[in-house]
Length: 498
Image (cartoon, rainbow, N blue to C red; front, side, top):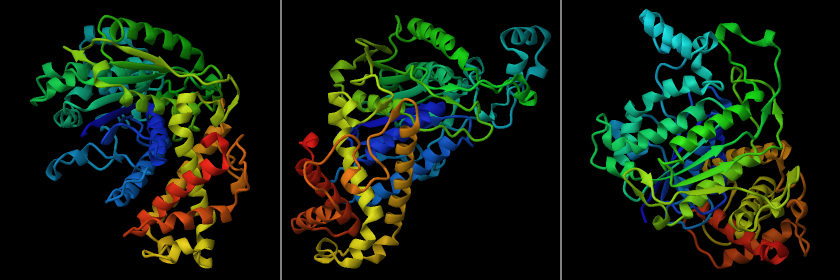
């Protein structure tokens, strides 16, 4: 079935959830979609989290392009593409995943609204609605916990070329998912504006496409991230007055969340019923980060809550069409969900996940981890020693493979994957599915093998699997062998994976 999923990731939280979803898809976690189109809305283009996610997505795309040619494996099984790649070459908007916000970089908010050209009455109204710090805020790093600013700037979405192209490429069977936080600035402002623009697309005179009705009645899922981290307090002297109030105060997180939830209740989940499936997630067990609103790049550690948020996207795609009916822009039977784990612990492992979550991700994540670990630590030795699986049949896995662009992209993705795991492991609350620096026999956290497990065991499984398979491309051979071999190892050596 040809059904696209458009994922709007708003702000830093949206970016990091898209990263978590990409890790799951790389490992072979299944999602019911023919292709996924991430669209990131974040004015902070120098955001290091954004740059890391862009690089991960590009590595994924390069690996997918090779593996999907006559290959039906689980690893990298879902196509991820950009909005420009849905458009003919003469209409291309660019090659990245980011929504282009105009007049934001190096602009103060008062410049964006032409404050100096307003007449006295309008200027008085603006000064009543926005503080001096608001007006002086430079928006190159986002809206810094000020959704009142974001709600003005993000109104440009509905008239943008990107939104028009999104509307023209949205089909009847496609779906939409929106990820945002509720306690910041960009996400809190962007979600209701974007949702309203989608639901009212059919009445937008700037969108002249025959399928705009599909947008108005689209199946839309959304996740709102409640507070799940804090920031350290900062002395007032540290605030850079020239750039306005760019510091973030965690003491306002709860009050902002309550105010936003009240607004959502009235305008989204109330009588409007604008969302078909709404997911809530957060965590009171938090860690405080250094108070950096983004001036130095904003590079937050990955968090388990973001992984759980990515699972909401997969869950949404598993809901049947009959439960997501929309008429005249309203969901007939809205669904509301939360996420939970088995135990309220400071540090979680795979066995602490709920049974359904374990069924979804435990095996593919572990297979992918073992595959990448072997390729990084053992493959060169295996090629040198000439194990049967590398050279018994064509194509051979040789030294040339180690210098190929495919293997280079896979190594880069492994670095991203390892960093993601390390960051979740040192966060609070932490998630430690694997022991990253342990040998292969002891690398799955809190899960012990019932038989001895070494790289010799791994090679025995690879040799046996290779006898039964034939491939034309070496890349297909490597990934297919590891997919089946890791599955056999887990089911034979570990009782938890049977």
